[in-house]
Each structure stands twice: as C-alpha cells, then as structure tokens.
Image 1 (spheres, rainbow, N blue to C red):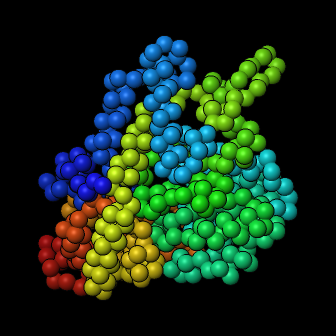
Image 2: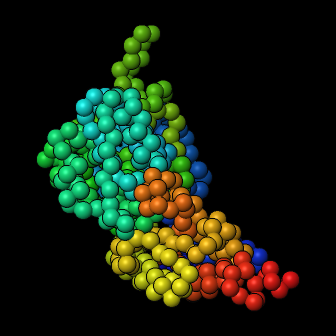
Image 3: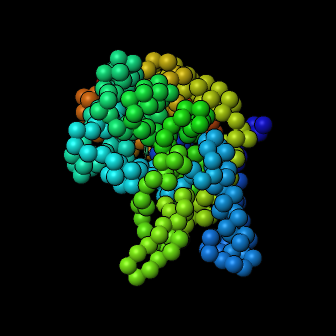
Length: 416
Ligand SMILES: Cc1ncc(COP(=O)(O)O)c(C=O)c1O
C-alpha cells in the first residue's frame, strides 16, 4: 500500500493566486494529475510512440502492446474482460455511443427509458434525443429533497415497459449515491438494460461491474487522476457484439469493398480512427496509482475531510448546505449557498484567496429546477486536500458577506 502523498501532485505545490497557494476544491470537475501519470504519458511518447494496431515494425508492435496493456489494466480495475473495454474521449462520448449504437437500434414507441432527476446533462440529453428519435418515453426517478432515491419510487417507475435504465452512481451536485445494485436487479427482472454513469463515483468508491452484473458503465479518465481526452465504456461482450459501430473509418473494419463493409470484432469495432494511446496509458497509470493507495485509505481520508468541512460549515449561520446530513453519504461533494449572495460572486470572492470552487447549475439544470434552486456553490474534495485548506476555505466563506457590505461596519463599501 502507498500512503497518500500530496507531493505527487506538482500543480498543487506550484500554482498561486495573488501570491497565495492554490486551494483546489473543484475535484468533481476534474482532478489534478500525479507525477506518475505525467511520466507514463511522457514515457509513451519518448519510448513507444507509433500508431497502435497498424505497425508491423517493432515500434508499432510496442505501441500496440502498451495500448492493449492499458485496456487490460482498465478491465482489471472494473472486474471486466479486456474485450469489454472500449476507449472513448470521455463519459459523454461513451453515453452517446450507447445511445446511438444500442438504444436507437432497440427502442420503439411504447418503450420507456428511465433516468433519475439527479443526472448530469451528459446522461440526460442523449436520452431525451433517444426518446424523440424512437418514439419511446423518457421517465424520471425522483428523489427526496436530500437526493435519496426510495425503493418505492424504483419499484413504481421500473416496469415491464422499461427497456433501458441510465443512472448516475453518484450525483455531481449532492454527492449522494444511488442504490445501483437494487436498480440493476429490478431492471433485469423486468428485462431492461442498465447503464451506470460512474463519472463521479470512480475516484471515491470501488467498482465491480461483474458482481453488479451491470450492462454498460462509463467514466472519464480526468475524474480519476488520469488525463483529459480519454474515457471508458464498459459493455457486456454479448451486448457489444450485437451493436453496430458509432463512428466509422479506419481500424474498425475487417474488410471494405466499393459497396460493402464488414466491421471488426469488439472492441476495435468501436474505436474508429487513431486513438488517444498516450491518454489510455496515462489512465492505466492513474488507475494503478489509485489501486496502490487503495479505496480503504481514500474513503477514510475523504470522509474525515468531509466531516471536518461539514462540522465547520454548519457553524456559519448564513450558509445553507444541500444533500444528506451524514458526511459518509457525500462522496467528496458538498453544495451550498451563502444567504443573499449569488454563487458566482461567492466563487469570485474566494478566488481572491486562491480558493477554487464551482458555482452554477453544475450541468444539472433539471435537478436545480426540482430542488427549486437557481444555482449553488460546490466544494469537492480529494484525498490530497488537507484540513488546513478546509480551514482556509471556511475563513474565506465567513468573509464573503462582509465583502459585499452585509451587516458589518467593516465592509469594503462602507469603509471607503
Ligand atoms: C455525473 C457526471 N456525468 C457525466 C459527466 C461528464 O463528464 P465528461 O465531461 O468528462 O464527459 C460529469 C462531469 O462532470 C459528471 O459529473
């Protein structure tokens, strides 16, 4: 086991704002990259760069081996088989692939697609379109005001008409986890296929696609300390093998004639054109890095930090927090509002202190409408954050209203 070492992340030590060290609390948007990942990408370009799956010369074979080794690492990490892993650009592309190559082939009028109100737009707009293109109906699972999904809601909405359930594992706004194992079991009883959006869970909790018996699962490398521009689609081989390609072109064929084409086997069928081999290798390095630290250590550290953050933020009367009261249910994410201050202003003021947090609708506008919120601020932590950083954040939040002149003689406006 490797102990958590913040020094692995060079950007955290070097970046400053107004000569103050960066306090990076936007890890749900993207994570920082450890030296190990940066080195793996650099090494690939320095030692093995050629176009994978094409070269009959040594360097080409080395590139292919590195790329396929990366696929193997991803497969092992998820408990899948190598030929069930498809490299894409990101979560968004993986979901669109399933929408075009699976949903549009099987759905028909009268069928239902079931998603939840927690979804990121990436796992929502494709299903709106799938419903529009096929005549199927899009239905939503609603949660309580903390984001918790009840068994009754699942049993009521997941019926014989449901053909596809596409659901996030962890909400990027409230941090809550959905009961994926119960959903998958119920969906299979009803003959529906399930896609899990792991974008927010992958960095915080172990994933086992085999144990869960899930049909499709998707995530982005950049959310788990890997590079941007590389994503993963896991699909059961039996399903992938029935699906036509999403993108067409080089390297996804077994033969092409003037008027016909035979597609390659899975997974090459879904990897048209030159792939982001360095990204795949960087991602594999990130997954190895996370495995070495181990989820036990990650969860312990992150829950401890979240508890500290929630205990502190609850002491600030002008702050309202969203989601469950239990820190263990937040998976690194905490949304909040500061009374009478627009979230964009909060984030801008915190930036003056070098603190990076998110503000807005977090690409989850239907959830915002459901919660009757316009926007929130969001703190999202990683194991590399510290209690000192959280203290710094809490102190800065306490100053926000004073900066804007609320209820204090010392406001920058009344004093000048
Ligand atoms: C839950 C969830 N799904 C999907 C996405 C989209 O990820 P990407 O932009 O990497 O495709 C995100 C990104 O924030 C997310 O949080």
